[in-house]
Image (cartoon, rainbow, N blue to C red; front, side):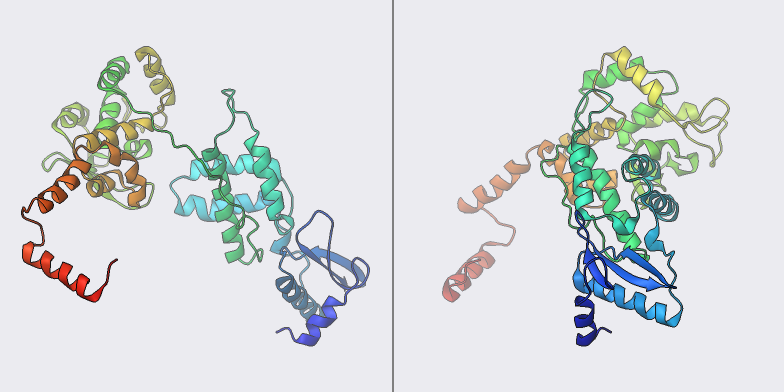
Length: 384
């Protein structure tokens, strides 16, 4: 524990030369200077909080006195090493988006490189964000705010774990805010476009498209689906491996059943529903899907947009938001709210409830209860 005397002594350290704490130009972090085996050592504390830096410095001096100080600590780990550790220990084990994380990690490693994680500050990350926002994609367009926010969120999580694992003391990305004004992609197909796309698709792709549009399942969920999870009798598909690691059931229409039945012949419960002729798993749909879109004359459309199309069809047909949330496997209702405007008569029903009340009609609470509640509020002068 730091005493007032210790703090005062540390504060008296002369910048640069004498032992103590100091700040370097263009760096938010405090650095510490001390002797180790006759050598002068200068190291970053990895924090801009002076009191936290004093504790780190005090701990270092105590370990030097005890002979237990290890100069090569995890704090010297490079950004590249941290990304690799994050992917191996966290993303691969606990996330369904490992492949996307790997792509993001590769892009970030190209920028930060071998820089020590203890020397990375919030200013460094803000400069990266500014640099990234000026990036031009392969299509010739400026990178979207959504893409930058995904990469920033990656760093926030990664540095949080580095703090949790005691590799650094402060998350430098914590104070860096996500970009506002992010526009969400919302591209859906019309009935004519859906028909045209299915007609233009190759034979093995057609049932996959029908399943995606009929259920709103993600591509990753479709490609790992096995026959043991398809219940024709009760009319649902059981999704065991989802992005949010929670299983769920999705309804199966008669049209989807008819599209799947021909694929079932000769297959067992452990076989993939969508597979190649030899029964092997289909790993990639990009080439076949893009070719189908070109033949159908559909532009600016991705496979994931089929999920938006399915959700829009459910909502427009009158599916309530809670049910739609369960079908899509959203963790929070806020993710499902984007389809709320498509639900028919959602405002009209609410409007009719009030219309009936003011016209003296029946209310869900009953006239007596409503009158009683109004009287109590008036008598107690309580209005919320």
